[in-house]
Image 1 (tube, rainbow, N blue to C red):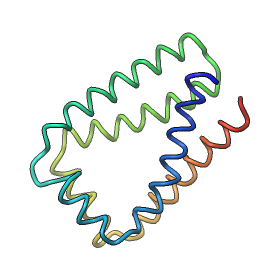
Image 2 (cartoon, rainbow, N blue to C red; image 1 turned 45 degrees about the horizontal axis):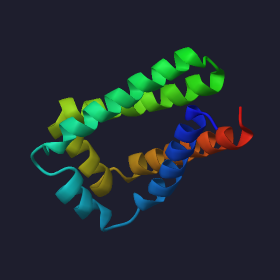
Image 3 (tube, helix red, strand yellow; image 1 turned 90 degrees about the vertical axis):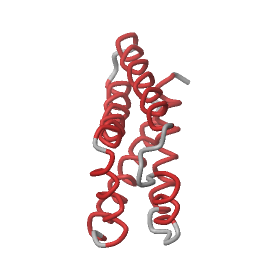
Image 4 (cartoon, helix red, strand yellow; image 1 turned 135 degrees about the horizontal axis):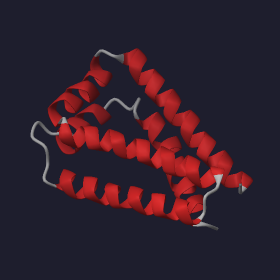
Length: 131
């Protein structure tokens, strides 16, 4: 099993498991209190730096093993980092957007959950096909 198969399995399973949790009503309070408090937590810098290292490592691995599968996994990981970087740079705007998803923007929440399920399922299909 290659590095990209492990990453595809981890990302695919985490997306498939966490997507339905977005409909759990107490999740809004958990997000507001622990994950997105009014002031940006200190650990956000550490997590963002760790994600950057993971993305750079993935691009390095892609250079070593340039296949369509490794490129797909690396792009998905890079797009996830872009979202994380947005949360780091524009924290207050990102927090208000996420909190609005739970209160008033239910259609947008459905689209996000659906896209998480599709991308996570696609990663798991790619993992099981062993491309």
